[in-house]
Length: 403
Image 1 (tube, helix red, strand yellow):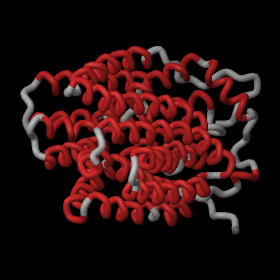
Image 2 (cartoon, rainbow, N blue to C red; image 1 turned 90 degrees about the horizontal axis):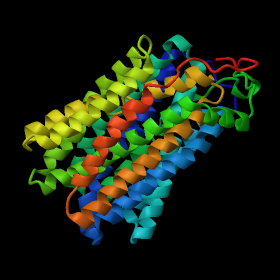
Image 3 (cartoon, one colour; image 1 turned 180 degrees about the vertical axis):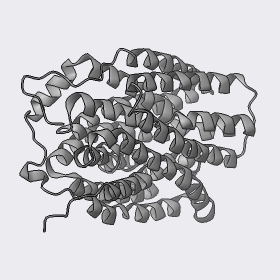
């Protein structure tokens, strides 16, 4: 295989943004399948929720190893494997006859696919190929692309279900996931194995250093809350609204609005990260989520209140991603950025697992989502507080690592 040409900023941003748009766009619509699948298969909401919870946990676990491979071999190979897993997982999700097979395909396989096709892998390319003074901005652009994918793909997925049925719709998405393959060629990094990024630490040394550093653990705690909140809302809000008597179209439009306003929120967060302390941005986001959820539960429920909530929570949705990853790069450098980002994201996915699973578990036992909403509010306040003490400066080493 010939050596790829040097990557331009435009090439990295366009290909990386399109990969994240597809991967995250497909993922954000999974909540639309909860009722069609459970009703057709005679499964409980907990069954579906558990599979999606497994998906989030699988994403987090495999994300660490996908990050290690991307740091060592480049994003290109990881993206190819991830795209293949995505297509297989979506096809398996459509054809699974039992809850166990559904958990293995919709859960384990798609989770592994997302690990290889989303932020940690793409952000590694950005960190290695773009200058530090453009890094936070570029991460914001890429995160905004993932949000646009949600805005664009959720209504498309809703229409596919209505027009083709839930099984055929998933098979169409499986084919669409393979578009990631040609985009991966635009992210082949030149000279990665030849030492373009100096690694003065082994993987074990980098991991040990990060976990000893208090700010890294605080970032992980905050990201746990991020996962709990966004996945609970993304998966269970459509069913919550239908239970309250609102039409499925309201839920589809709400999820699309979350994606649309997240385009703005993530871009602003990434841009502000070049000028404002990123820990303060994160604290504002988490506190804002707690306030938005509280107001949503207090206000009379109507399509208008749902759309207003979706707009506000959308602006705060994935806007945690650029400042969190930029802080990691700022503290530890970029040599192991994908792997360390993968560890922080694992914490996010543990939160996602609990958010989506608790939503289904407590609903089946209480007939209500109220308890999980209250937990999400309390966790938002907690995350705001733990991010304030984070130290953003480069870690002191005996022999400084190139950034």
